[in-house]
Length: 547
Ligand SMILES: Cc1cc2nc3c(=O)[nH]c(=O)nc-3n(C[C@H](O)[C@H](O)[C@H](O)COP(=O)(O)OP(=O)(O)OC[C@H]3O[C@@H](n4cnc5c(N)ncnc54)[C@H](O)[C@@H]3O)c2cc1C
Image (cartoon, rainbow, N blue to C red; front, side, top):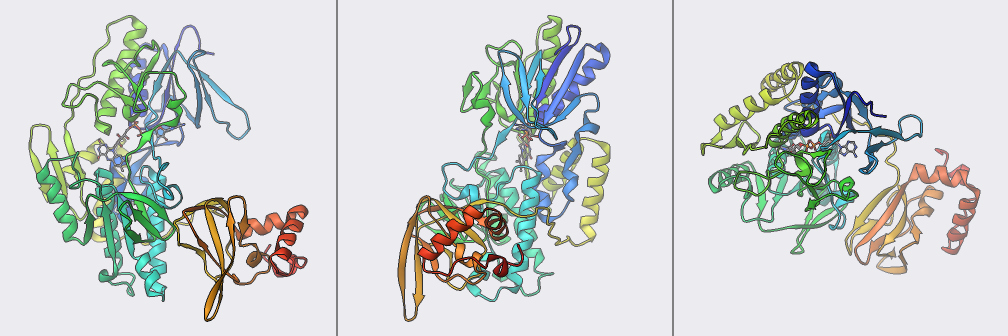
């Protein structure tokens, strides 16, 4: 429990807002000694998000954007756990279990909410299953690995249609994240042609889909937005304006006007959504974010504070609330730390009145745009040099600064590494979304998974030259694809979706392990196989030697 002598301050979230709050509190505590600062974060590192897009092109290394929290905030007690619940009445935070399945409870005197936002693909069919988000280090690594895999496949793919699909890259969202991602992705893929000799630059199509009239509409003035648009187009990026991403499937990005962009890579940088944990709290909210007063205290709460992307903080600028940027989060953190201590001491709190220093964004290939608070607008190499200098200075930790400077220097002389890091084992059960008319598999394909229909309908089609015959239709709760796995032979039919359909896919190895170990499941499968007119799996051990 919290001691009477010391005030226990628990900070939730180790991003810009959380880390800098903990850092300032620890600094203030050096002179006082009556504070206990706890920091809870999912990862044991702090991620400097503005540099993430550079990981795609390999300009910088994977670890150049992160700093270990133990080194950044050595005087705070760090809990690398998931925040599961907050009890505002009892003033206790409950954390996910560690090695042992036991709940950890953290009581607090003051609580700082700095959980940021989340990527939420709900409401757009297939995005959760097939679109790649871009928000944190794991997303950046996943995207880079995916791009290299696609290049490897495209370089040996004999089917021209599939090759074209693999070499088409779609990014949705023309805000900062989307523009920076598409710029780095375009550079990376086009430069890769030097190494993948069977791929020509002409084969590559990179598309940016944006719902507005021009890219960076809300972010910068028209002149700079048009400069960015023109530069990307000159480098080969096709920009589709006034178009909206509606759904996705394994093979395509589907736009609201019905256009199907056949692609093997869809990155969606749709605006982030409020953190789901905040939904559970009875606190004043607008658009899902916590409403604070100008001192960063949550409106109507004595011991609650909020900052960063999860908070709505009144602004003295043009907008009603501060925008969700790192520069605001870092300064809000300093104000919160000051005000918590002021509150403990019974002194007056200060108000947050930062209005922003300006906006900057990189456009790849040593170009950037910048619009500074005084009205100064820059573009091109000069803006890029300023962009790098500012972010280098902002990156926390001298060691990281040195490593980043070395990475940038080496990038001038050395080619990027096209190395795919295979970090995961079996993919496990996954969800797949298909649009109407799309094939799940084709007759003659190798069996790779068992499928369960969650939602929608598929038809099983047997190709018998010169025609084809629909054998049956399967709906929610029914499964298919087991025969090829049980009998280790190619698919004996094509399965096609008759409407938008969501499936659960159980990979071959996992399916075979289950079928081998559960006699009841095996006999059920045999029964269905017999009903579907196939020999039973009594010789399963012989036909599936790998399990
Ligand atoms: C690609 C990209 C580029 C950007 N570029 C810029 C830029 O150039 N300039 C700029 O000013 N801003 C930029 N931003 C925005 C900026 O990064 C955010 O405004 C800033 O990160 C907000 O800080 P935060 O602390 O509120 O949230 P975050 O930095 O998102 O931190 C939230 C933290 O909470 C943790 N967390 C969440 N839920 C839980 C849980 N249940 N349990 C435990 N931990 C949890 C997360 O792991 C994370 O560490 C960029 C953002 C992105 C994604």
